[in-house]
Length: 252
Image (tube, rainbow, N blue to C red; front, side):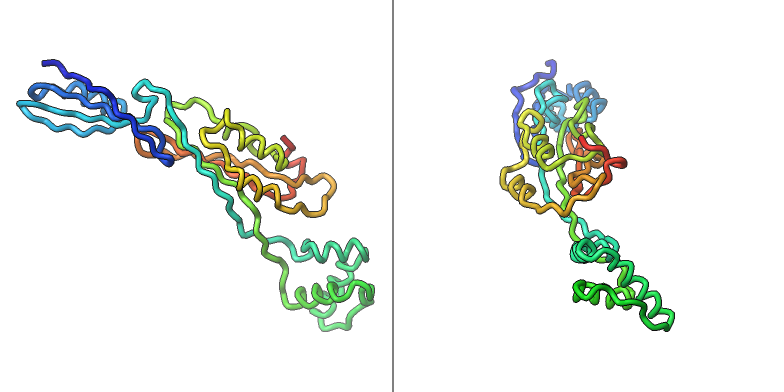
């Protein structure tokens, strides 16, 4: 008796996608050809062999068995721990804007103090106490301050037969928050677009003071891809929020 395929069973996992289970039965040990064909396609199977009756059950992603594939999307908002030059701290930048030359004045006095020499001219009185804080921290060797940088991470789980993905577009370019939300909430691009709660959080992030030639936005990084079970791929894309120089990272 030739191998007989049964009706396929369809299961779905929000993390792993749609999986099809195909059952084959045969009188005697007659499923070797079916098993060899699945092995060539790298499709997982369980084979119960018997000289009386054999059963083979193969499990694979939809597209591998000729059915439409269903991708899965996972969204995360993360925070990188970053460092910047202490002089770029917003409070010190605001002091500098109100009293130009204060930062350099403080730096000069710190350099003199480190050489065991008296301070030079003091900064403007109105710059206190911020200029005093800067002086104290620089004198103690503090050169940078830590801050959290928001990151949006998206992971798509798709069949390895997928030919293209939105993750490959606009890499190393800078999105405004509006442009980012337009992309990640587009139902034609994702099976599960980014939830509204996460969009609310991203929209609520306050922008710093603008700087010439810089754009406050989300830099889209290149996407690594990793093979996973059932001949599927995990494609991970991250968007990093910062003020990016428009020459280095052009706007979308």
